[in-house]
Image (cartoon, rainbow, N blue to C red; front, side, top):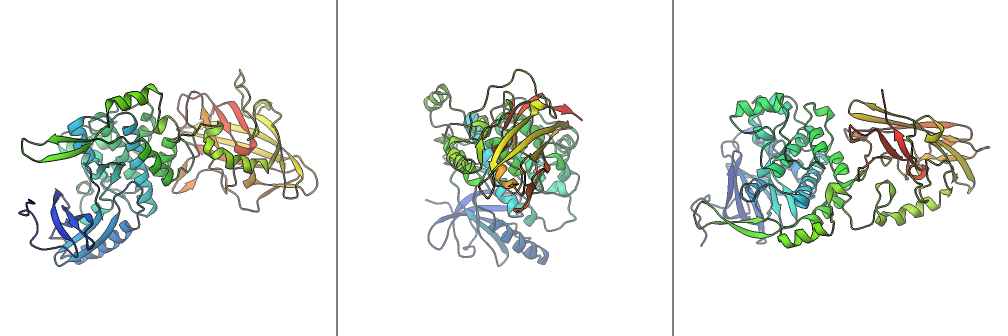
Length: 513
């Protein structure tokens, strides 16, 4: 029998309340039925807010923005409204506990489930930010662990619940997962969510908040002034977590960069990420008794130790250890599943192999790695290719890696393409760089690392060369291109430079500015 003693005396909007799911500082969440009898989660905001005109205005704006967020690894907002003195938001109901409950009961996540969590939350943030929304309060209790993986909830709710812009920023958010700029009352942007993402990953991996526990002033002081506790974080994901926790929001990767790094490919799509998370996530229904009472909570944990043991024995590595695909990998970080489409494009554009020993054609096998480091700007960092122009004529190109320079936490690559043909022959740049309008798919492959580094993205734009559809290289002319990378390990001395259809240039030495 359902206990209705904690329910409001009436329906909310067109929704029939079933039972209370939980309560937070912003309101109470109920399980409810919609008009068709389907289950939804309905959050009723604090009643004192609904009577304020400024709140109603902000509520309508933020709720409309939240409804634009794509469904990728989120509990999408289905409806929102104000019914009398009650403002409410309706989201898809996710059957599963929150991350905090799971870690408290079962301990930290490990292996594929930890990696799936990192990818899933990054995917959700990508969708949230693309809709122009900032979460502002990403924390373990706002991440539900459903049967197919993590789902982020309550995005944009912190801003809705705090319409008074003069209030302290420390009030909006959870201290242990807030960014330094939130603590200091600065602008809260998508970069703040990335900081919180790193804190959530640390908690999931270790069972501890990134800046410890204690009173609010103490924790907030550590957020602004101390380094986070990273002991116990998987070494494969630790470098990305460290970058996301940079005190300077301008130096943190964007959510899309998190995805690219974790999945090992440039401009990884949300569809790819969701499929990867679903494939890697291992749920199990288990019951945990709470406080000696007769209530039982359902927790999703690894299906069986035998299954995980078999997977480990078979050498299954998911998430950040390799792109999440069952396909065999091909040079440059592309999967064999994509090889057919790549080959089809390359067959129409490249007709001769690279003559220099340090490079390759995109359709030829990679040559043995040279024993010595190749210094950018030398003959060893150059190669020759031939391409087909729009009139089916063969055009010779000379490709030179000009420089590969470390500048702080970034590495800048510059290369030159020279048209060695004659007459009016020319080459369309996009044909050489993977039919893109920017060089975002060029990548660096550090020695001993299983996934490439792709160009940095800032404010939604690739920090790399771009061109128009009519950009060409006239006979006898050359063009210099560039790309900036942030995810190259600090101890990397050499990398392979994959210029796509222009070849793979191996063992390039990274110099310092």
